[in-house]
Length: 170
Image (cartoon, rainbow, N blue to C red; front, side):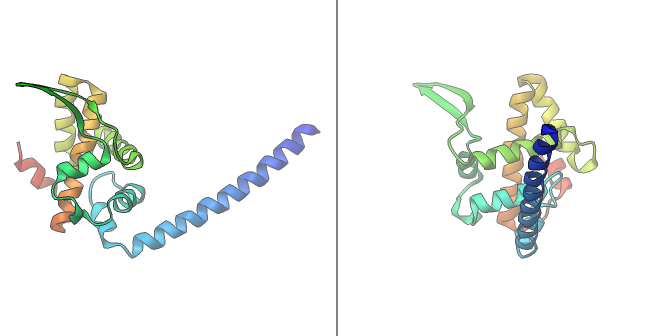
């Protein structure tokens, strides 16, 4: 009897949360429809609504970053650097930056690393080479960094994703 009351209370909460999520998804879809840059970013493999809109919300105008390195630093995916005289040591990522941007694009890197389509083949090959040398976790962060650089270049040059451009660079 008491279990039925508990389930009834949770069910009402579940219905309210479902309505709220549906409303938020409608708002995101309306914003996405009016944003051509989101459609451009979604030509990248495994980049969907959340990843594209997260990047656009965090960055706004890509021209405020003079280079992709500045965007990587802003996202917190840049490695820490220790320099002393002639010796330079690179450490883990700085994590100084937009955590939501970093988190979403690392998830995109996860999806790209396991995707078996032709569009991700050059990225996956590169990921596997890095993973063999440095380990999978480091390779995932490096892939996220590389994907952000590609997204930056796409927004900067106003071009769609082209896998052939990746194959040329070796």
